[in-house]
Image 1: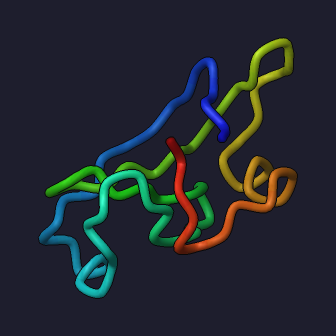
Image 2 (image 1 turned 120 degrees about the vertical axis):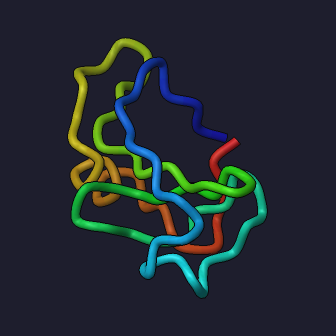
Image 3 (image 1 turned 180 degrees about the vertical axis):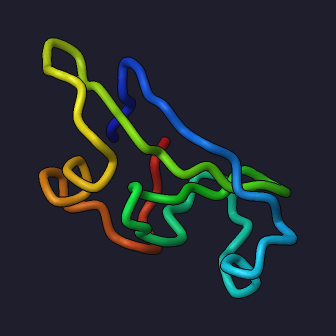
Length: 77
């Protein structure tokens, strides 16, 4: 389980053309965008653009994906 200490994100509305095939299961990583991982949050999605783990420096979402091996279909809880 990975819970970041802090994060920056933006909301993607369910009507956005990019998300028509994405799951709506809360907490599921549904996509990897250039900005970072996209997490399902009910009717909306969050793209995590910057994350920080306890005792670590803040990193951009794309770097975080490469460093921690998130995969689509996995969960952030």
